[in-house]
Image 1 (cartoon, rainbow, N blue to C red):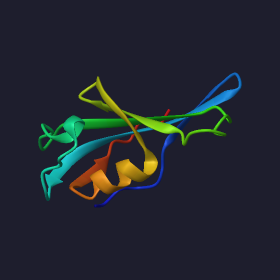
Image 2: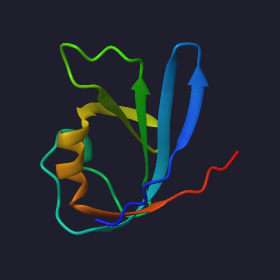
Image 3: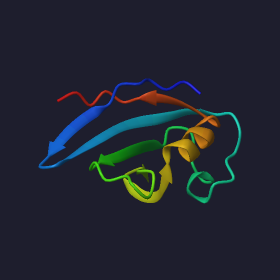
Image 4: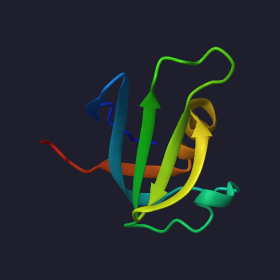
Length: 95
C-alpha cells in the first residue's frame, strides 16, 4: 500500500476533523469487508476522522466514503489492514 501522510485539517469549535481523498490506482487483493468489496480502479475514497477529545470508552472511528457516498465507519487499525489491499494516490485538495 502506498499512502501519503498529509491530510486536510478543518477546525470546528471544540472538534478537529481530519480528512483526505484518494484515487484507487490498483487493487492487489479483493477485500472481504462489505464496504470495500465493490471498489474499482479510479474510484475515489474519502476518509474523515473527527477528533473531539472524548475517547475514554471507544477508539475514534474513521468514516469512509466511496465516490462521495458514505459506506462505513472503521477503527484506524481495521482500516489499516483493509488498505493493504489497495494502491492509493492522494488527491491534492489544498485550500
